[in-house]
Length: 510
Image 1 (cartoon, rainbow, N blue to C red):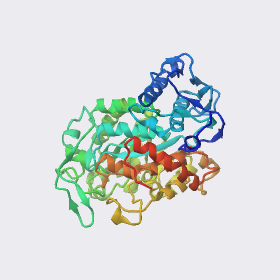
Image 2: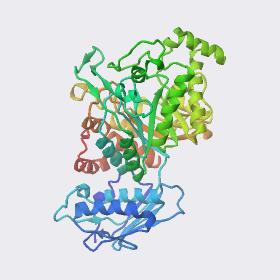
Image 3: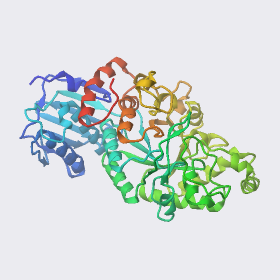
Image 4: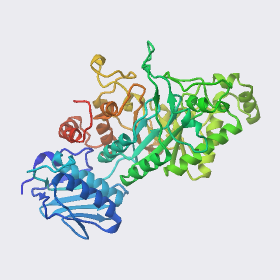
């Protein structure tokens, strides 16, 4: 059976190695999936996906024409091999690798495989191929900010599915900020009773204009457990972010004792940076550690993000209590006071078997011993941290901030925060800067795209800003650097966008 050329050559991200073969396999009403008990969940998901579009009642047996096989000999847990021929399809690897192999298999089929209803008359041909594949980086992420604009749980689940299709494996959920507290904390119910609601939202920053409408929303702990479980079945780790010591106004609005002035504050309606930051009292540290206890109970992620960015020092400079803390701890300035604050959280998380991760401002005043850095203000902070032996996730705003414009012609684009990052610039990014030492390169965990939602009010707008740039990022963090080719990616992307259209993704057209 002759293999069609389009599906086998339109895979995103590009596999490490693919050799096409002349013969192919046709899925039919006699096709079965073969899998051991350990791979039963993955087999069931694949069965449901194939059955929905083909209309075939595909069974799962101990052996079948689509064979899912555990193979512990591959180098990394995410690696897999896929072989397809007229006899069938064999996908081998660890459970994680086999799952990624099934995502590749779906992309090898006609785009209609992504429909949720039977497609009459379709020819379900898997092109003949031998594929050997593994990721370039361990951390392949997207950040979703649900503070500036809350996103429904159902959309978060959809985004996880889209990440899994592109072999992205870290969903960084930004859960607290000045403009909203989005996670239920049972010990401190006012965090959501008060902190999850604001009376207004900015439309534009300069000149300042507002919607005139209230905005609210938060996830219950059960919601988040559902999200975490759903993500785990798709080998996506959800990394929670609880901002501190800055970006704290929503929390201080709920519990004014956490602030420095004693002033009663509203949840912030303006975007940008607030001077209202957590105080440095022992009681406030304990409060935040109580919050982290409940966060860790929900999220099994090895990494807990504490923000650490954009923390103005004005109130600390004016606070007798903060100045007394500095004298007590022998700190020379407020930068060292922030570093001291972060170190308290680093030690606490380490005592619980977790790792602290924060934005690159946590370098200022001295980096906590166990801290991992997300480098967002360019690459300099990430280079310094990696060369000093700290793990780093590269998130530089000039390359992977997906809230930036996608065209220089802003009049034809939705209002955005600024900047300009076209698809080609994302694709050309390399998370391993030349300034890294050989030892430093080993500390680059990967890279991550950011979806800050000041000017992204809903799910469809998120999709427009994320895709297809997230497709380019997926290739940056998964595929080998050798063989990178923008023209080839662009060619493969066009049929891939057919898949996204069927999946009801509101991507930006090329």
